[in-house]
Amino acid sequence: MRGSTLMVLIDLVFHYGGEWIRKPKLFYSENLIHKWEGYDSDFLSFIDIVTEYNATLGFVGVQQLFVSVPCGKLYEIEDDEEIRTLLSLVNDKFDVINLFVVEDCDLYIEVENIIRHKVIEECDLDVNVENIVRHKESVLEVDESDSDCYNSDTGNEEVSDYSDYDSEELEFIAKERKSVVNEQVV
Image (spheres, rainbow, N blue to C red):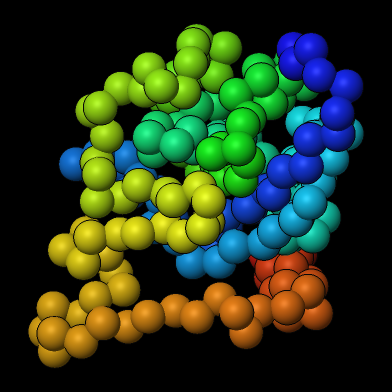
């Protein structure tokens, strides 16, 4: 745990609406992001993150929660103790937390737990550098050859602009997802 009594503000970036690409290396083919900016890290809890995915972003359930550390490696978080481990890594270069989940209906992904992560500087260099999340800017860079955002037939990039998404639109998408799920259940 941190020994400081100062309030530490972090930004949380919830990645969703994409899909997990498992081969050749694991990465998330991103579609949308949702942010909590200037969040007091002392109040961060596992259940709050899961609730945000379920209630606000329209997930049916969260099977696994992952965080990406600055070198791009993903670690699993399963409870509040592991949230505290994550927060012990926060510093002026790592104050934007990128979160990813696996929904209940998706296949389990084998990822190392955050408890086993020692220090940010000791990140394995065995990561796909073309798919590193830039934490300070919260931008996911994906190599064109690995991305659905590049049309190899025409050679034109298809770039998504997330700046047009607002909370009303996110709320609409969440309600739409829930209604589709409810229609499938009925």
